[in-house]
Length: 515
Image (cartoon, rainbow, N blue to C red):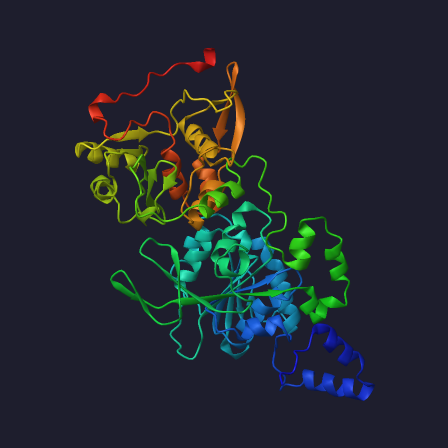
């Protein structure tokens, strides 16, 4: 028979029930030199402390002892650790808590952010305020990387920083521990995708708290879940999967906070913040921002109605968003009427110039379909080579003037980028008699729901303008390559499949502001 685990309330009751002599004996033991410098509290904190996962996400609700866990591991099990906050000023709370645990600031160099701990252990404190600040820590090896308030970091920052997790001591485990609450800003939504088996209610194979799941990065640079820890072939390479888990906690699990009135403070918060912080509800208040172009539920519905097809039908158009280097990907979206085939992507380093980009896309096009190419930057080079192959091509310059209007006929578009995304929105509208179906791709979902718009006045007319691609990049931590590839297949003026390239001409531009 399994003995039920003690709750924090049980422990409090036990402590209250101790007589004075027993309490004095317990105090003496804790203050002796034989007592460990830090021990996890029973419950979720102990589960996270002892977890075998390579990457642990601990928390959800506020007050669950997240900071203590991040400090406890460097104090007890790790050798060379670093804990990150997004901004350096936010490290003060970590400094104060470590001082409280140790009873001294001896060994701490506040200017360098380095703490020399007992038994030769070292803890660094770092920050990455700007999106590209992770470069400051490039090549810096640590056996433990902790992230306090993980939803404040971009996905690029996180993935880049954990890339240098290593040690030359075989007796020390390498691990990543993230602590945080449900995101309150769009910037942190990537966390729900990274730990989707635990946090996404619609995940097809949900995971239990503390359960380990294994992942590799496939040839497209995307996460791919695998059955277990055994090495798997990814293209020509044999890769060892990394495990993840999520362990929820709340103020009810924290012995030190439960009796302080902190729970009552959380209970007094307005919704949806109350549900996020008190209960760790990752879906509370998940309503879309007012100026989000494409509602999240529309995209999810389009992905839910998608089914693979043997008979795909004729290809209508192919959207191509080229990339060069970095973490951006060259993405191709193959549209067959109202149905999209699975998106094809390769790392930007593979398509580093026009010839390699043309070589990537040429085998994908069929039925004489037009290739809609982003003509800015490397796209112009790719465009030249694709044209040279005598393929049907449409150059898409998002900043060009648009002559189109919304379906309702009441608004113009500031440029072609606004045009293609709004027309995609109209195609996704559930009231559309033939709404499109999109492949169930989490990055595509993130890309399409990250786009925002505003209405501007130009002359005597109102027009829709999308926020810049740079703004989307800041929110996602990467370029919305897949979303752009899909959206480009909705730009106006795409020639019919099989058209002769030289017979197609761009429509004559008119100054619609004067109409």
